[in-house]
Length: 254
Image 1: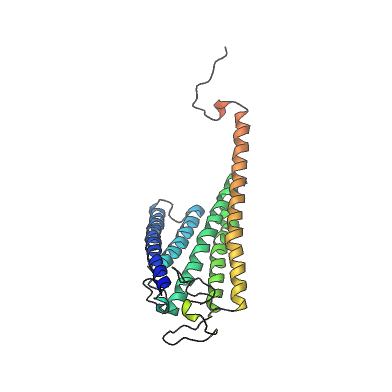
Image 2: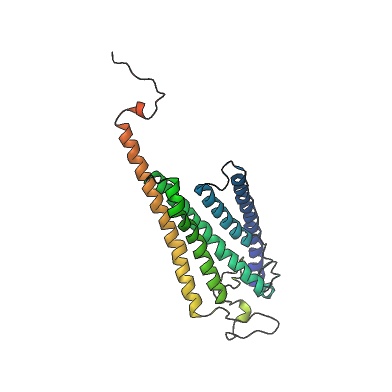
């Protein structure tokens, strides 16, 4: 019990910091959306639409972290501070987390790909809007919705005893010595919830795509843009500084 109380105090401090930071993130992303909608172009440009989608994804993820633990099942209130929810609120919390986090990450990749097409390949706005933009939106939204819905269907959202509901298996301390599927007296959620092969496969594939493919895509696209711009600067430098700065005074050799 002493260990549980100590962990609960730690959970309180961590969750207050996390939830407060998430509120700041929500306000920041909301401000970005407000600036986009107030700009002359609004949502008429591909860049603004991608930024809008990225901000929406960040808001969804931030809102899932800004609940001060109130949506965590009350079954674990002895170890998780301010746990007042149930399994339904926990599943909703996990769904928002898995929906928002990958969406924001993949929209960041979409923004990198957009600039790569503009900077390196000189693609026109019309080409990007008609040929590329459907994928720049469809992949972030589609992948996020697919994995969030799949985990929801396979009971893949469970209390992680900390500040979220993304644990693959429900296995709190009070389930020690209890068989999977059994409900300990005085509690509501069955122990071992989420212990199945489909959930494990979905999490493995989703984690691989989100935390390996997404950073790799961002790194590759940024590297390609950096290399292209560096080459352009070196080529321009061969003809003198005046070609880079037309306002610079020209030397008269006569």
